[in-house]
Image 1 (cartoon, one colour):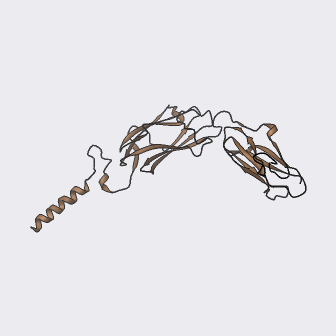
Image 2 (cartoon, one colour):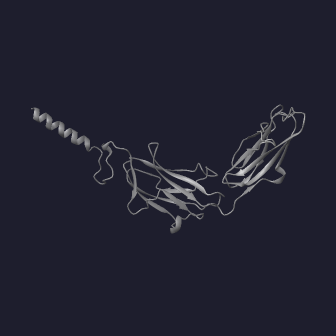
Image 3 (cartoon, one colour):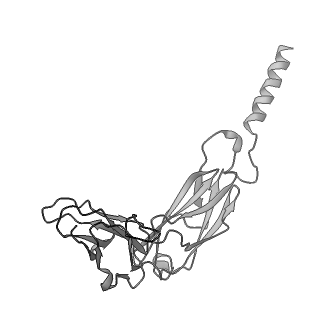
Length: 252
């Protein structure tokens, strides 16, 4: 009787060890209890960093697309590009097919020509399973041939009254906000410059920054004298490419 019980227990343990193993592929064994893995191989490429030309070709081979053979024990996965480091993060320039699958699979990536961004643009192609990134392919694409970074000259000087407030109308008593638009295809920043003594200028405020504009407002001027400050708008990847906006405020 004891031998029979031991025999049955052995059968149960062996069956549990093989639950979820798929005979058709040696790469998947769900019941093994290990970490999720991703491997690239087969006839596809294995690079996890891609250099793409401005025209959308891959590196020196000038291929119009790349294909990955992926071996994984993930029971479901999606291809999720991350454009957060781009000038325009909302613009999607990488196509994947298929964009999702189960276990082992093959997917192809295509890249649009870069005619929009004057900086080298970067992206991450994340392979995600159940909300977890299980592999990442980094992409670097050459910049567009022409860099646009321009503020119209008449907008490069902004003048405010001493109060810095609207005197009447629906916005009476609220800070005057002046918008400075940019014609740009590069990532940029706006810096309020220190004064002649090297001290921070705290009466100028820069808000409402988007990829195409920023807003300026000022605090009330109680110094009794006119004052002036500058805002330097510069390309993030080339600080020498900059535009200075002068802010003037009248005396009380």
